[in-house]
Every structure is written in structure tokens, then in C-alpha cells.
Length: 316
Image 1: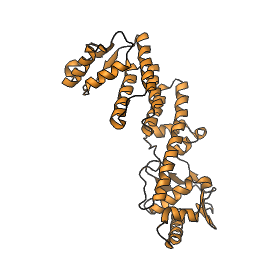
Image 2: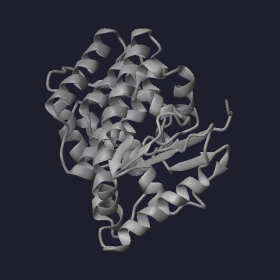
Image 3: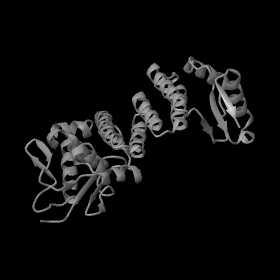
Image 4: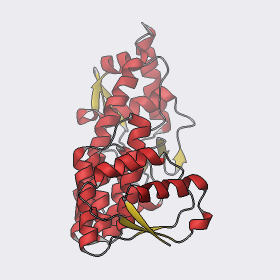
């Protein structure tokens, strides 16, 4: 049996390689789109009529020729392996040959967690593999294909998030919190405004005893919500945050260390926000600042305003 391999990377910047040779330089974008569509279609097949409408709807009578030419180009550049062609054309149908060896990428294996390994996970996290399906791919004057691509991208995103959630669950159950956080941060990248993910990040920091990081996660997320969506945190998010802070006080972990040098913010708005979050606190949260003299003026004003409102006390 031949050791020749075909690798098709559908995530990030799409790649097609045969025996290590990059084929994107010799295949047209329409050929690449045709391959991607067939790889994702049910049973990996589609009618020729569907492919013509998807990729050459404005070509009229030339659509059939364009399809034939691109199929010929694919066959020329992705040769037979053990007598098997990569794409089979029979009658009115085109399909990916199930007997043709195509190497699965780590993200494709991730979609099926049973076929997923820690080596795949390391590839995704440590090498920075993109999680976005065909991230920068676009065809001019092919609205139907681009609409399909948007829908497929959204569907793949949800599948990846669900798969990552199961992996994070596994790590969390085993007490491997750092690895669980790595996975959750990838989920935040894919879906930045899902409260459930941020709540999980905060709670893992709580289990690790990193209350300051839980506070940072909450504040960063609230700032992003305000900046990009013009909304405040949900009640569930605020309740989870308050619960973590109450736990920290009960456990004697109420000190939040401040190491950064700049907290340039709207301190009046921050004060009002914190007053709403901590209505039941009789004493301010202790904030220990190691570098007070190095803070800029607005940062000092922020903390002083919080002290005046009895939301925090400062230890130096």
C-alpha cells in the first residue's frame, strides 16, 4: 500500500498538501472551495448542479465547463493513490472517494472527542492552531458559497466549543486546573460573550486560591461588555462574582494584591458598579498595593475614591 498522504486543513488559513507539497499555489480558489464544500457535505457528496450554482451561478452556459475544468485540475494535482481518485464523478454527482487516504487534522479529531488525544490538545494550545473554520477564505461574487461558509463556520464553532467543554470538564474533574484554564481561554476566544465560560474561569481561579485572578477576569469581562456591547454584567455573573468574594472573606483570602502600574479608568463609574456588587459587605475589601508611588495620578484617584465609598481599604 502506498505511503502517499493528502492533508487538508480546514481551520485557520486553509491548507492542502500532498506528500508535503503545498497545493494552494497550483489550485484555483474555486477548486479549493469545491474541495472544502465536498469535505463538509453530507456523505461528502453533492450534485453537479449544486456545485455549479454555488460557484458559477453567473457563468451561464460556461458553468458546466468551469466545473469540468476545476475537477480536471484537482485530479491532475491530487493524483491517484493505489488506483483510487480523490474525487469521483459519476453521472450527476461528485463525491470524495471514501477509499482515498486523507489525514485527519487535530481539530477534526477534536470534533470527535473519542478520537482525540492529549497530543492533539498540545498542538492546539502550544502551537496556537487557529480554531476558526477557513478563517480568511472568501470568494468574490459567490454570495451563495459565502453564505454557506458563514453557516458552516458557525456550526463548526459550536461543535468545537462543545468538544472543548468536554475536554475542560475532564481536566477539571482530575484537578488539572491549569490545563482546564488553557481550554477555557480558547473557548473565550471563539465565543467571547458567553457568561458561562467566564463564570467557569472565575470559579477555577477560586479553586486554585487565585482570588485576584478571579477579580481580574470579572473586571476585564465587564469592561469588554461595556466597551463592545454597551451592556453591564448579567445578574448571574454578578451573583457568581459576589459568591466568590464572600467565600474569599470567609476563608481569609480577602486580600487582593495589586502589581500593575496603571488603572486609568472612570473611577466614579467603577465606584457605582462596586457599590451595586457589594451591598452586603460591612467592611471594605483589603487591597494591598506594593507600588503606590509608581501609580499614575488617575489610578491613585480611582483607589482613593473606592476608599471614600468604603468599598476597599488600602494596605501599603
